[in-house]
Length: 245
Image (cartoon, rainbow, N blue to C red; front, side, top):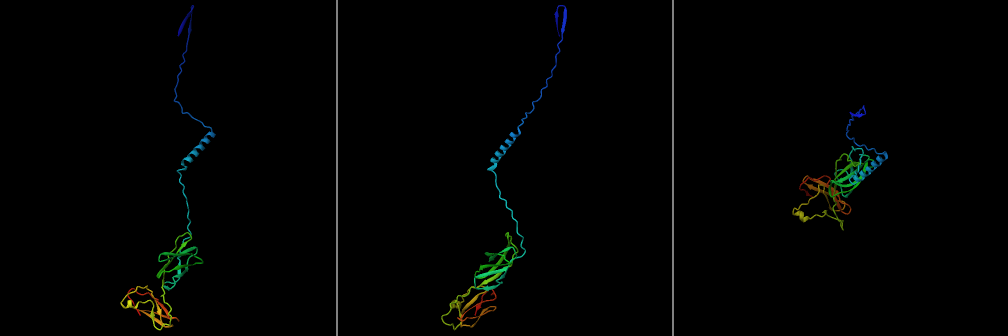
């Protein structure tokens, strides 16, 4: 308080001090508000940049789905030629029965020999036979290549017919074709199939009997008008040594 004297009058001036209290606050985080259009444009740009960045690293995959045809519950069966049949033509038509909506693959001694679609529950495949025994097996598949039940094999014998040159004159004696009499006289052996075919020349229309000694096993035939004859054993020879008359 300050007092001044003016003449004889005392005046008193009162000064009121206001107490101001200042409180410091921590600065708040700044908030930035973007216009909606600006935000949309920035989002589009980000998508384009991200797409171009990962385009080179992206890996494509091919996805495929497979729906199998109904499973087969019946095998394909060979009906012709019959089992253990002997033929002299290496080209044979293999026929049989098979289930609908299938195809048949023919195998000879485990090697693929032909294929045919099953038509009216049947199939036919032309096959080439090797000399001797041939094991034929028909394998059946549905239309999505799922194999059906296995069928028993059929064994067919391809007998090589003897090469006999028709004689210039009518034969009067029995002759075995391509037989080295001297070699056999010395005890030479010849390996043959279990169903050998033997042939030669004889008087026309004569009856021929071939005997394999050991069982014995007999094969009978008849010479034709030129005197040519051949005979194939109907049953398999047992392994071992056989003398032929």
